[in-house]
Image (cartoon, rainbow, N blue to C red; front, side, top):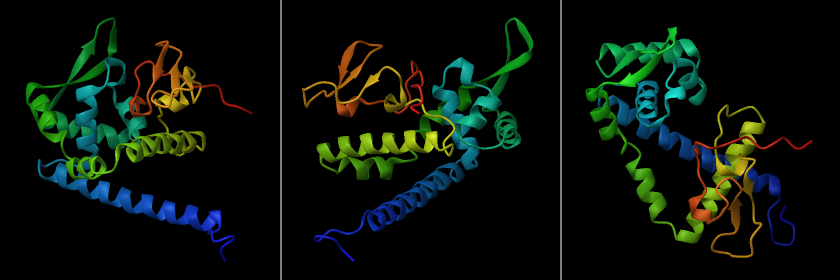
Length: 206
């Protein structure tokens, strides 16, 4: 029963969760279609795109497995398949004979550039929302990611809101209410990062 014309929070939370689950199904459908169009699995697609953008220290099977929450053997199989397809190579790391860095071949780089638009319908749908709604949605999504990271559901979170340098709503300027202590500059809501290379986790609050 509603209270003062409003639904109980639990019912609203359930509806929001249902909506997000429906979105994840749609995103999965887009990923599968994008991967299958080029003879890849979704794990292979994720690995290929990550290797095109991640720094050298993350171009390892273990790091990729953690990034996409799959087992190391699953990611190893995906990497081996990409290697057989001529899309990546294992490069020796200077000073460490046992380690190999994963690197895309020229053909792999070309395919990664083609695959970057696999989520085009999602991006287009987001773009039709009013800008204030998009900014609020970004902040809410990052807060959800941080919460799921604390709960142990998401293993990797390098977003602004979970960083020790992030100052939330510390400025009176509505155009740039946040502050980055590392860069020492204001942060507009639209510029909050999902994956920051300088991210340092905030200390957990007890």
